[in-house]
Image (cartoon, rainbow, N blue to C red; front, side, top):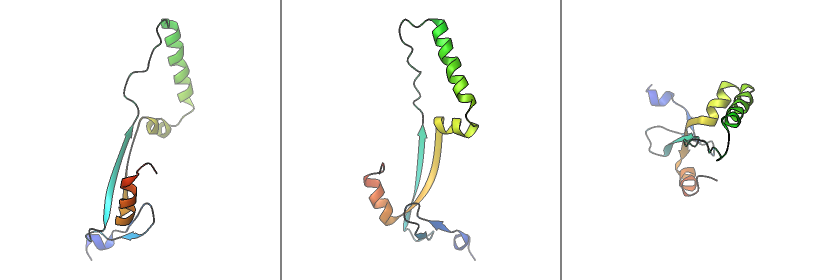
Length: 95
């Protein structure tokens, strides 16, 4: 039995079984990351106000898990789509 016979893949959108080696599906890799620019600091903010804002954000983050924090910064995933679902998805990926 070959490795491809043991691998079971399904379309992420419709659930159709996908067979490796047939050329009938697409592998879609999605990478998302938070805005990399530095936050805006309003003119006229004192060092104390900036420090207080940083402290507020740190306190807010204390209630979050490491995974929740990472998901806000960076996320990468791979999905498999059958040819039909891919044709529909590629035209409007945000849908």
